[in-house]
Length: 294
Image (cartoon, rainbow, N blue to C red; front, side):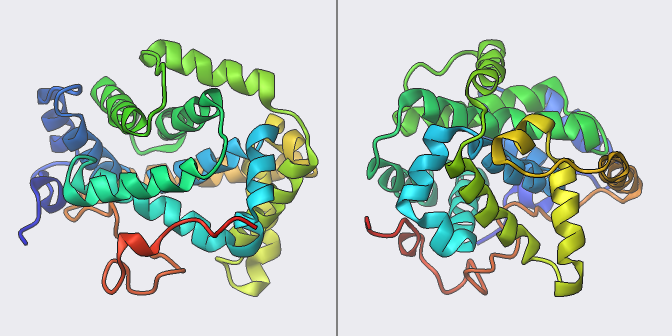
């Protein structure tokens, strides 16, 4: 199968040529293409890190973390649960949510969520983190800020996924941004379930590093969290120099990325999945999903 234009790349002559292309596209009508370019070619590393952080943010809401603790998903198989979520969302981004693979991924997402009694507001909040966390991250640490077209396209991409997930009452862009901030201000608070789910997932992240570096990775990850998140998890407060070092390292990455030639091959859906060696070869989307109820 030939690669799509978004996978081949558009920028043989200049670092900002794709941004000029994005600005010629309709961010509402062509949101999938704009999102694919942005997440796969312009900011793949940043999107991955920001969506990891987005998942961590949802664990700061006790009603969400209590459900996850009850299912045992992150206690028993944090890496696989993370990989499942990552693969399913990447499938919809890479192929489109109305493609055959996108529809299959959506069915898997709906099957996983349909097993549990999740409030519409919690679903709205989780959806909002997938829109606004990458935008805020990239504006802070990316090699360039996101354009208005990219922000709008990200909103419509996840808006349409949310509609297909049966999430009700998805607000417009600005109102949804306020909902996200207000929901965190009201619901972020310490709970034992936050602590437990946060601990399982922090251990997963640290396991990505060689053993001698895991202590540094743990301190660095905690230092990179916002104070409200550390409080909600019951994580220790870092030293001031640790938070400064993390911020400086992330900004340095953005500066280095600015000097790189434009990426010509999309990274969307091509990252390593520790639970599925060799993915996407040899695996089916139907193999993914939640464990049976305990």
